Image (cartoon, rainbow, N blue to C red):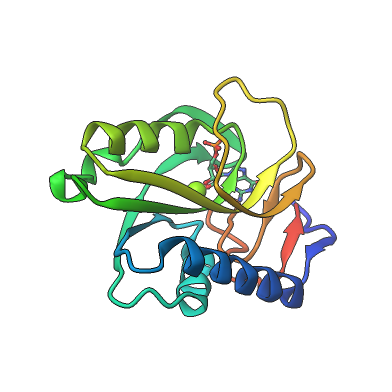
Length: 170
Ligand code: 5GP
Ligand code: MG
């Protein structure tokens, strides 16, 4: 699979992450959210975002969720069982790489509600412009992109291209 054009440069990503950080700082001032990063895709985004926010003693937790095998969706989200009662009564911020069908975030938000989180917000670096069966409106979005498969900055294709510094179309 040949790698395609650069969609977002390192500089564009850096600038936008900083802006998101400012916005998150304003929303969470005086609160201590649990920040849940959805691995592995959100690895770079989460790390950069955490450097752009200043929330005192925020708690970080990583969850490994998977719905893809290669470029194909498998239709079920694996990994939600790792969540436990520790979110009860706490604000939770979910950080994910990309919102595509919305399946992943809808399932995760549903589970967190069930576990009693006091507030659930979502922050995604990318949102694909496409029709969705299940609807989820993220609270913070880095970039809205066309409905193409992208890699880099944490996003992979069968475990490849994750470490690219830019985001590229596959
Ligand atoms: P959703 O459940 O919203 O359909 O998909 C979410 C997950 O699928 C994302 O967190 C991401 O891991 C993966 N995904 C969706 N679109 C893409 C894409 O264009 N490129 C890559 N590498 N992963 C994607
Ligand atoms: Mg993901």
